[in-house]
Length: 240
Image 1 (spheres, rainbow, N blue to C red):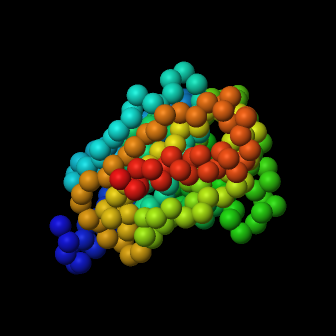
Image 2: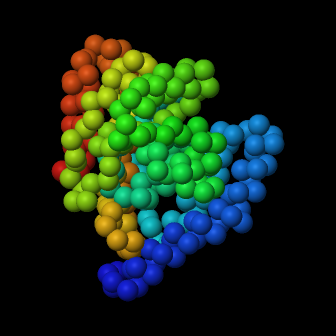
């Protein structure tokens, strides 16, 4: 369904639904979880929430490879990035999951607090020195608190849907962890909610979960070899 005015209205309605439900539902739940010292459970709220919202707005998520999600151990998801709704797609399938996200999102009233509460880590793309502590923070939370993290190696959303160059620093962090890596390919999210403008086009999004890459393989590869392996894996489904 493509109608500029209607699709723009759907986009604004989608964002409004997130904002309103946050104030009415998620905010109080977050307060409850803070008082009960169960901050990681907020990720499960997002998990169920996005499953409901996607149904309401007729966003159909087709998932392949659920059996590849590691059980009983922490891991890092590396995914391509096309749209604002990529986070919702991922957390609706893989949970619990925290993110490395641009620092501007953490400055958003209320929403920024939720990101911190979930264990997300801010990344300042304009200040390399400010990011030097990121590997240690992420590794500590994976090792000591058993977090799962998602990182978008492109660093930003792709307008065309084609893969952008991957950032080497992300793969240095992964090699130093060490922790299993779960490559994921998102297909079609950029068409459902494009980066430019604020429009929503109801339709299908494919989420392909590839076989996990074990630490033994990661340790044997150089940073560039690991980067190229992950990029080739993610790209393999974009070409189909």
